[in-house]
Image (tube, rainbow, N blue to C red):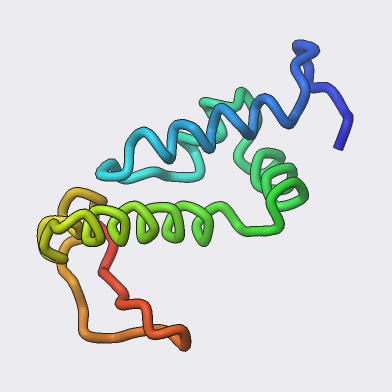
Length: 107
């Protein structure tokens, strides 16, 4: 998507700024409203542009990135309980998805 926003900034740059925020703040509750404000777009428009560029819904993306961060911490020797808490999950669950990756309940 090569369109420019109201202030001339490309959508890719706005979405990249929101993605960086997600990666830098894994323990924080991250809402659509928060990310859309970071990107200087309305929540509706942000979600539409985000999905167009990434192929994922915002909530799915945030949860996946948090889970990937928790897995990285666990692979470095941290306990799952610590990794889940460090990524904003309340508790590690025994449920898994089809790939066998454990779920954790988000805050």
